[in-house]
Length: 86
Image (cartoon, rainbow, N blue to C red; front, side, top):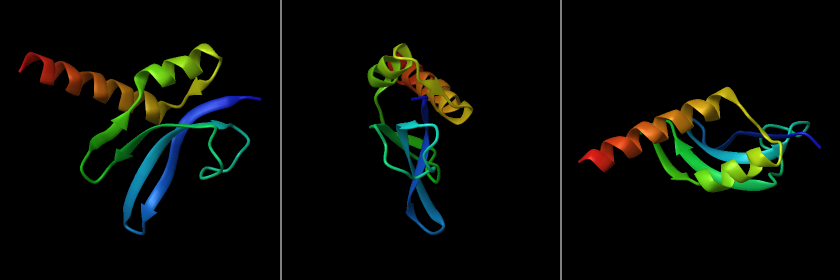
């Protein structure tokens, strides 16, 4: 089973919210997830939840991270560094 870590859309029309999920690559975008790893609200631009340790666990098992989730990881690292400096 090929597992990907990708975004799954939830929320309302014109008010999207995305879950970061580990899911079989052959499933639909909003299909049943193996694990929910975080949430992202693009309207505010903030990561509401983000479980980096669980993402690393899935990657160690062979999961592939999509480009969109890689960008969110990078954004999360930058925001964590800024808050650590303050």
